[in-house]
Length: 176
Image 1: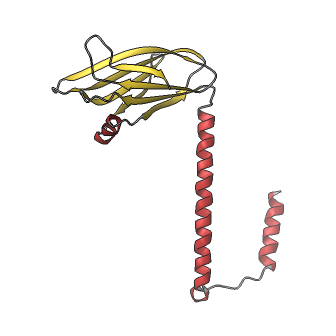
Image 2: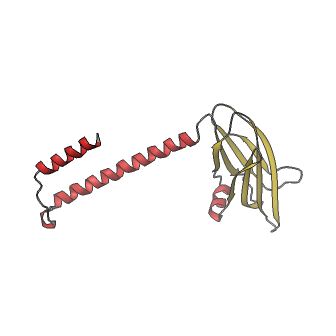
Image 3: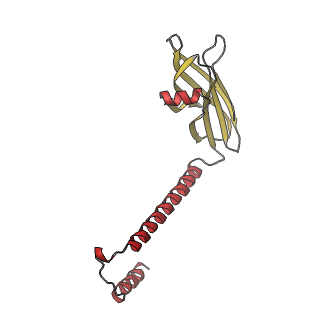
């Protein structure tokens, strides 16, 4: 098959009269046409890249095993969040250290997707550890674990973080 294509290309090349083109022969219309073609090719490449990314996500994280975990903060400013660590079924899933801008966005009501992964259907345990500083400058660390059920559909969990309160956990996990 490839030899047939090669022979056809050779025939087209031999019997197709090609005039040599110099820089002086290219007119303004030709360069505009070339620019348009380049832009069209760029657009096609970006479209294909977008489709490949969507396909990759569907292949890596099939909907029947997909778990997405989101982090938000309660409205109070009683502490500064430095980092969050997530474990699923006792295995480290992700760890994130927050920059000033990320922390500011979370304090203003933003939400961060901290983890996307695969888990089987059934019951699972998620462990959350947050590390930060209190208003008075003291370091604090708080950990808690929660059980969640994963069904056939994709699962989205939301973690809401708040400052440490005596007798209460500053970490809440719920379905989103």
